[in-house]
Length: 417
Image (cartoon, rainbow, N blue to C red; front, side):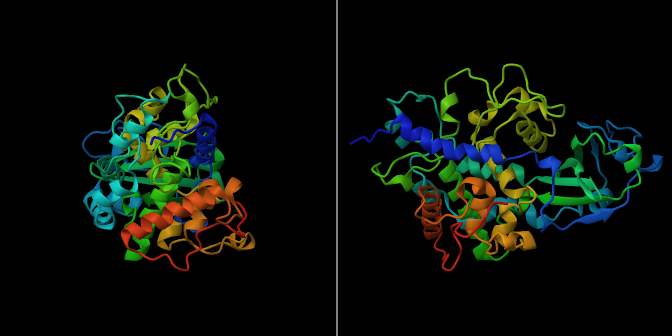
């Protein structure tokens, strides 16, 4: 018997998911977590003998005068001094092997039978208004692996002038080609008063996803990531076939915008200007929203802000890209929040402020606070949303054969960051 979902129920489910897009704030404006390892350096200028290898768009420009959108190929010594080198343990091949070891294709597909584009999804959705007969398996295991492969080839770095975290700039490094690109820079970064102010920096290697900490913590991280995006994109109801936890990854777009020309989530922004007629509503497993977030994520993925600003719909057309946006969110600190990655692998140390607000126990509960703490803080499993997230987490860790006994999995006693 086919169980239908009312639009009222569906809209309620999606409303929760949308909050994460709103919480994906402009990362470049405040780039550091308190647990970050900060590297201090004096302002850098290259001499004419230190020009880039293999031809550069910069020619003889100094590194500290690199313009947004420009790239340069680094030498091995520059990669070491500016990016702390390239750690082979975080290679794409090793990142993929870690995921495959933690969760096989068969077990993944068993966990999410009604994910969008599967046979089961088509059977259920065929008579619904949002149905697309051409929809393919968006959240396929292959797309997850492909996303991890591509993300693992990227390093991300934020630099800011000492004592002024808002005065920052953001770089990305293609690890294979050693190409460094400046993707964002505050207008005051190179003003005369700042020229001699030391620079602090933090680097994130996206290849470290489930590659740090103990074997147990690595599996817990993957489970926590999947549990949270399963909740954010979940469909189903208590009476749905297989129960509500069989319906994770059911959506890939904010439902009110499916098959419409409605334009929303647009804001004037000098760094990431919206394209005329384009809507930047929630898309993908993390429901990426607003043009400035699309532009920044586009820069991290492609090296240019223009790709997703001009074609935001690419996210719903490409499951690999959708997973990439979620992984970037997961791995990147959003001060004063740490990254969910650091929390799950044991790299997060609560600050005095964290302790005063009950955020002391690293675990799945803290990842909920990072994603949606303003709405889901200080709640236990009696809250439907917390129960659903925790339910997915228990289901996935059980499928992996690992124990989470004693872990703080809800947000009871915690206040927002």
